[in-house]
Amino acid sequence: MQTLAIVGAQWGDEGKGKITDLLGAKCSLVVRYQGGNNAGHTIIVGDKKIVLHLIPSGILHKNTLSLVGHGVVFDPKAFIEELNKVRGSGVEVTPNNLKVSQNCTVITSYNKLLDGAREGHGTKIGTTGRGIGPAYEDKVGRRAIKLKDLLDKNILMAKLQENLKEKEILFTHLFKVKFPTVEEEAQNLFELGKLVAPFLTDTFGIIDSALQAGKKILYEGAQGILLDVDYGTYPYVTSSNTSTGGIYTGAGLPGGHIGEVLSITKAYTPRVGEGRFPTEHMGDVGEKIRKIGSEFGATTGRPRRCGWLDLPLLKYSIKVGNITSLALTKLDILSGFESLQICTGYEVDGKIIDCSYPGLDLSKVKPIFKDLKPFNDDFSGGKLSSELMSYIELIESELKIPVGILAFGPEREQIVFRKDYF
Ligand code: IMP
Figure 1 (cartoon, rainbow, N blue to C red):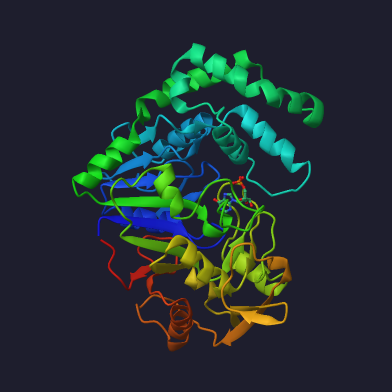
Figure 2: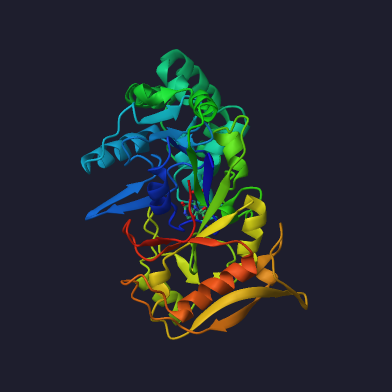
């Protein structure tokens, strides 16, 4: 196998950073293809905790090149802050091991202001406030600032002028927020551009050459399939294609196909932000999962909503993402629970369905739960209890794909591979 995609099968926060870090060690390239610094991928090594937002999770490995593809929306200010922080924790990040597409769309301060202002008007999405949606709007509206534009102040000024035209009316008359002048914004971005410039290149060409040379590539998805702008729980989604489809448009896979799509899934379901969540547990169980599982956003610190595993949604994600195997993370959190349930179907308009579908109104579904025997594993000796195995086997038999990885803690070693990757 030459190419592996890692995607989230839920609403993000599945633990993709840890698995990407582990499997990235075996690859020549680790490539981000969508999203931006709304992501928060956590890697724990010994007593060090590294949270990556824009930098791919392959960065800890000396022989792995990390790439940020053109489909990523890129906040140069956030990038420089992250770079300093990651370097401060002893990780070497240089233009030799990190390369960024010069065609990434820039997240400007206008985008961040709009994101914040819109959340106070109309439908509240519960965004991360990082300017993600407005930056993608600029991209498809053909008025985006690209990273390469930061290198020429005249081009930058002209593009910002064009870019601000309509937003100025919104800022002044609708949202009534203060915004930087074009000169101020251009100066800021131009200075940041000088710091980002050494990392900029044509990442598509690097991927093309690597594939032709038979090198191994890992594509690192951010967020989860249920947040995909086309396949997710619209409008409560992010603004990119978080599913496997985003790889082709956001980074490139010239002449190739994805060897394996590994989906990361928590042993339960978390969600942050607005939107209907059928298995959300509003009582003691949800609270217990959040507390024991430390379910607070890695980017915003917001408490995550929590509930039991939802198989109809996972079946849907598997179809959408062409997922071939699953990594089940945070199994340790459920150990010791007095009761355990998994949602195996929905009742919709008097009918029972076992798989979600595009556009299904999740506010109209009634989840059907199966009770399982609780497990009480300490995961120290490598042997898993029969109760835990029943939990895993139910998931495999319902989803009809193997659970290739079990993760039961944040450390690199707290993992069992039941399948070979690479
Ligand atoms: P945005 O991506 O900041 O526009 O936020 C849109 C929705 O996606 C909100 O519900 C966010 O909470 C959610 N979201 C965005 N990024 C992540 C992530 O990395 N993990 C989990 N949820 C996310």
